[in-house]
Image (tube, rainbow, N blue to C red; front, side):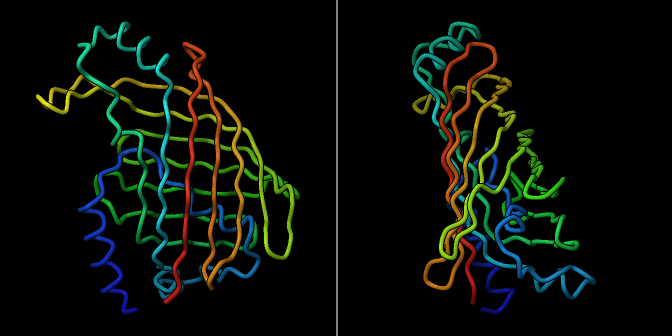
Length: 225
C-alpha cells in the first residue's frame, strides 16, 4: 500500500477512536524478531514505517473507583472515564540501532502521540520505557522466557504511571485528572499469523496507594502490504 494511503487510513482510524492511555511498546519487536532492518539513514527510517495497530485497555476495580471517588469528593453519578483507560497506536516508525537498541515512534494519533524504547542490558534481559503526550508512562524490566519457532514470550516487572479521571456521560461534567502509580508483572506472547506478527500482552498491577488491582490487556498487529 502507498505510504500516503497508509497515513490517510490510520488518520481516519484515529478520528474514530479516542484513547489516551499508553499504547503497547512498538520497540519490543527487537526482543522477538532477529531480522529487523537496521536504521542507517533517512530512507531506512522511512522504510520502517508500517501500520502497527495497537490496542490496550486497563481495567480498574470497583474498589479503586469507590475509594478514589471518596478521596476526590466526586459526584456519585460519575464514573471512571473509559476513554482514559484505552491506548491506541496506528501508523508508526520502528528505528533499529544494531541488535540491542530500538525506538518506536507513534505519531499517528496527535492526541496521544508517544514514543518508546527497548535496550538489551545483557543476554535476554531488556529494559523498555514508553510515554505519551497525555502524561502516561511505563518502565518495564523483562526477559525472554521462551523462543520457539511459532511462539515467543517475555516476562517482567513494570512500573506504570497513568492519568485518570471521572466523567458524567449525561452532563459531560469532568473532574480534574489525578495520577495513578502502579507496580506489577507483565507478560508478552509473540506469534506470526497470516504473514503478520502479533503480540498479546497481559499485566496485573496494584495501585500503590490503595493496593487495589488493575488488570491490563493489549494486542498489537504489524501489517505488511
